[in-house]
Image (tube, rainbow, N blue to C red; front, side, top):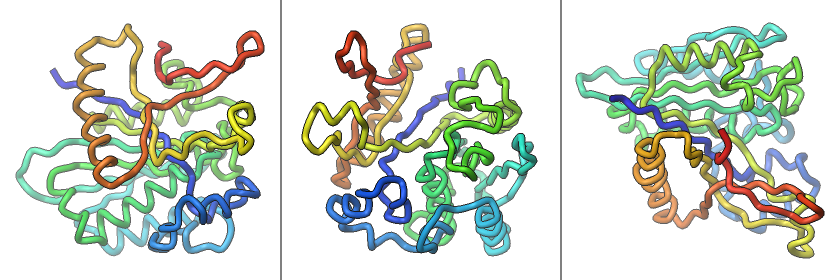
Amino acid sequence: MKYIVILIIVLYCSVNTFAQLNPQSKQITQKFFPEIETLENTTPALQKNKGFTDYDDLMLFLNNLVEQHPENIKLNFIGKSQKGYQIPLVLLATQNTKEKIKVWMQGGLHGNEPASTEGMLYLLDKLLNDSKYTYLLDDIDLAIVPMANIDGYLKQDRYAANGLDLNRDQTKLMAPESVSLKQAFSDFNPEIGLDFHEYRPYRKDFTQLSDFGITSLFDAMFLYSGNLNVPENIRTLTDTLFVENARRILDKNELKHHDYISTGKYGGEIHFNQGSTNA
């Protein structure tokens, strides 16, 4: 039986291009991420002094990659956003006879989490142009949707044009973007599915934990299924195979990680919840 592992990776937004998200974020970035200057300015937002990658930037960036690497990359469109923008799907592969793992990645499902989209573009550049990473395509067929919620992204809003949270529309499929993503995902039929998001450590709840009002600065947080209705073998496979290997690589590179948590108030008290325990 073929198992599909779905994992949401939540990234801390640390790139100083995103400084306008919080008036303190540039100072925080410089304090906690002094290595930020080592990032190569290869993606649209990293090349700007201000602002994020917009749709025109995105398409220019992707078309340039196709022109430079026609043998390794294909650009398709899986549908349109509610405001008529074509949703790009990037397919990366090398021509060899090896049996490969099929991996699906998507970013920008929440339109106000630009680190996810920018991370996808940075990854595309590395896989195609950096010899330290190009070998990965010998073992992986990769499908990437870098900007899944285009309408929300362009106005830096969490929701789609009809007000729906696309990350809560995985089963009802009430938004056309959800239908397009589901169909493209099914057509590609991956073994691994990765959905990239962003979290901000500044939250009102955390002001009661310290004067600074901040939680730990994790480089990545993992959200994967812990719901008991999911078969135990799939839950175990996800945790002990995929996530555990990712944890080891992060540890090796001295990066911080944690299972994803959220907070809520109940009876006036703050409760911390581990993600992905609901149906």
